[in-house]
Image (cartoon, rainbow, N blue to C red; front, side, top):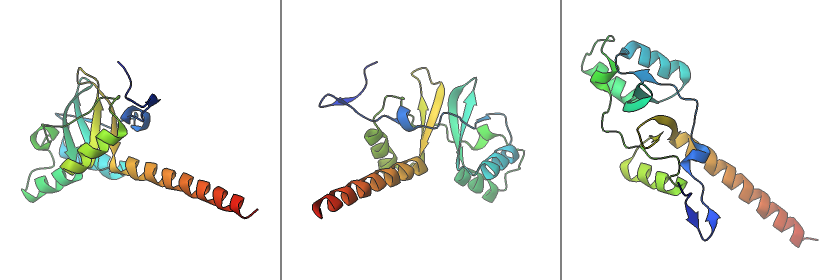
Length: 151
């Protein structure tokens, strides 16, 4: 697999920034468990897997929608999860992933291998953290250039 290149320089990929230590649920897990995991983990997106392969996505919004329909807390994740999940490969450029998320108003993108095995996730928070780091670096460069002009 070749890495994305632009002008001979390796582009940053989702594989460089994705969260690899994933918290997931199985299709048969109940919503009470999913709700607890989301709340205790301070997360908003919960991939649903079967034998390590992505089968769906469960979000805080899905749980709220389910509660509004008076679904039981013993309802299974498979009954509420989004089944048509857009995912990308680890070699997908960070720019392409951002464009997909923006165009579709996604809060996250699961990262899967070609066979559907879940290997990571990237979220809006990851992009905000990355942007903060880039801006901080730019500020440091601007400060260094500014102090060099005063000498």
